[in-house]
Image 1: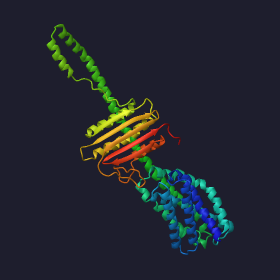
Image 2: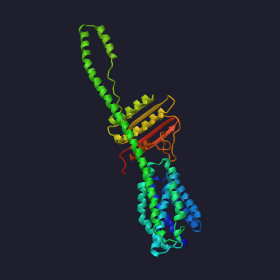
Image 3: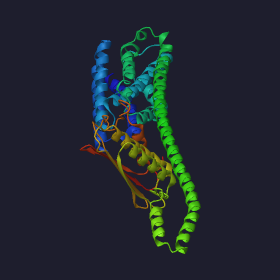
Length: 446
């Protein structure tokens, strides 16, 4: 019986390990394959040990405590091996544990429906049923993790909700261990009525709750990103409107100067005709200080980028911020105009806001935008700041506008950087914050 129980335990834990590796392998930070193999072996050993202890305990509370201890061990291992926080890892591990619990629950139900009785202890038939159900339902749980769990984590890593959301699956697994689990529930003794409906209802309640919860989290994240894009679009529209207004003003001024130039030539001709050199000299002196057309600032040959840079330079001037722009771009850059505007708009807006919050008058922003080669684009934004730079446990920067939230703008910048094989670097020292980006070549296929 012990051998069958060990087999059942392996059938419980192996799908969990395989699912975690398939969905989160790109987030693993331990050396592969030795580190991954060691973590998997340690996790399996802990689970088997807990299973043996679980087998010899009697009360639901003792079983719940052993289950929690084994689960926490897995969470600690996953947190150490991946880039996720403890709260996120606790949610990930507990949900996949709920999946294995439901597989075991359905296995007992199928056995009961087939034999008309409830198994006493571990039997080999349960192992066969669990193996078949694991193979049948693994694609569904894998799809659930890839379409809901992973997107929710990727888009909202630093939301405060991940410090609390783990309560739901942990409560679920506690209820399962103490009330619903086949070896501890009332229907283990009187299964005829309850056991026909409990597994299906429990699974439906469990994963419907998770699905609704994760979809809500993703929706909140997408709404925040849409608001960020709308905000950037409004800035670009304002920049373009300002650029068009400047062009229109220069057109009007050029027309006026053309009209006035004819009169100036007539006056100058009259002075020359009368050989009035003194009058000619005085008139030329007055004409030299006459209002002439102010040359438009052109930073690059890309109209949208040029307008955006002009907009933020004017914003900096309004805030009495010293701003220097060094732009050197080729005729063709390795990113789209829109993506470059997203990067520059977010970085410059953060820099301007950081300077505006400063009490000191020594405010400065420096932008360097250049191409090392036809495929390498370098972006560097450096600004002064005061106060403390806040970061989440996973290293992401938190917005100064909303407490506990990751800056959506920075997230957009990093997404584009990753898309273009890029490298990002954030440095802050001596009240100077610097963002350096290197974007390389064609975008990756996704």
